[in-house]
Amino acid sequence: MSRSQELFEKAVTLIPGGVNSPVRAFGSIGGTPRFIDRADGAYMYDVDGNKYLDFICSWGPMILGHNNPAIRESVAKAAEKGLSFGAATEAEVQMAELITGIVPSVEMVRMVNSGTEAVMSAVRAARGYTGRNKIVKFMGCYHGHSDSMLVQAGSGVMTAGIPDSAGVPAGCTQDTLSAIYNDADSVRALFETFPEEIAAVIVEPVAANMGVVPPKKGFLEELRGLCTAYGAVLIFDEVITGFRLGIDGAQGWYGVEADLTTFGKIIGGGMPVGAYGGKREIMGKVSPAGPVYQAGTLSGNPIAMAAGMTQLSILKENPEIYEELNEKGEWFYDELAGILREKGQPWQVNHVGSLGCVFFTDRPVENYADAKTSDTKKFADYFHYMLDNGVHLAPSQFEAMFLSAAHTRDELCRVLELVRGYFAAN
Ligand SMILES: *Cc1c(COP(=O)(O)O)cnc(C)c1O
Image (cartoon, rainbow, N blue to C red):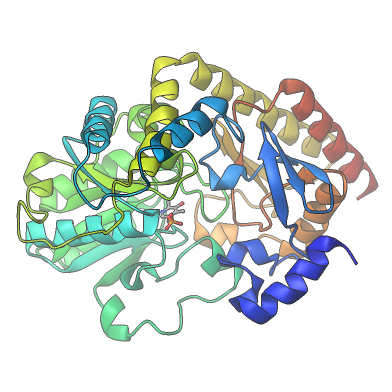
């Protein structure tokens, strides 16, 4: 038995499902999750000594590759001064200055500890600011695991095939309205039904938790227009797209500004960090400046700020990182699509910049209903073939592939050859 198998057998007796976040359990694809011992650059190494080219990248944070020396050193240096104070620090001011300097729509920002918290808090701020209760979210978008967001959510919720979570009282989701991604008319209809009740529309500007589904031309602009017209807050959940598509995220990429933005993943450089921010008049409602309560014992933690600030500073000062990463992404996903065509496979490749995925469906994927037509058994087979050949994809059809600055073209060429071999045989 492998060490990973041994650990997993023990883990399931001690941790629900053996993991601390569901998608890690290989639930939808079968087999034993690999227990990771260490990672460096584009590679992860498991406890059995296997080496994997990693396309999870910690679900996004490792945009510079694993174990970046500058980030590691900044963490070690911060740790010398103490791990947490529960009091204000200079690092938090520097972090806020950095973020507000990078994302034009973010005039004020509050640090939290996860993407879930960022979204939960942004939604509360939007409700407090507008004095309205209803929230519009899109089917297949994932916004963390807070009660009111667990309606037709993507990511692990989608993989598990549960439309909603047990333990969420109907009362918590009665103000959550679901719309169809890439269909602004479905949002317009909700505004026409509830013209004065919708506090916010929350969207992943590139949906990346039902596989990758880019916004159609004009979709985000229409959401912007509807929110402005009806006095609702437009929230971009940039937990994945923030600092990934470019330094200024999806807002820079598509040229559409949100009122509030949520961040996570990349912003912490691998540490547990989230943030939400936006217009001064909305953020000014957050306590203790205003009446919307939100707090956090470890929020703005000095070690986490050091890691995040180092990563964001590197990204900000080296714009060529994005140029190269996005070019590499375009090339890689186009090649992938080319191989599928060459082998007569009808599968879809969706991608934006360094984010992409292969959907095992013959139907173009523009929303949740399309994504759900994917053959997850075919994905599982493909996943295991890649894993057996040293390539660790996200263990679910409905997650993105994340490329990092550390993935070289040579390594990606090897992946493309593997894919060619797989589809030649299948
Ligand atoms: C990952 C994710 C979240 C939740 O972040 P956590 O840090 O896992 O709580 C929220 N929104 C989006 C778009 C995400 O991808």
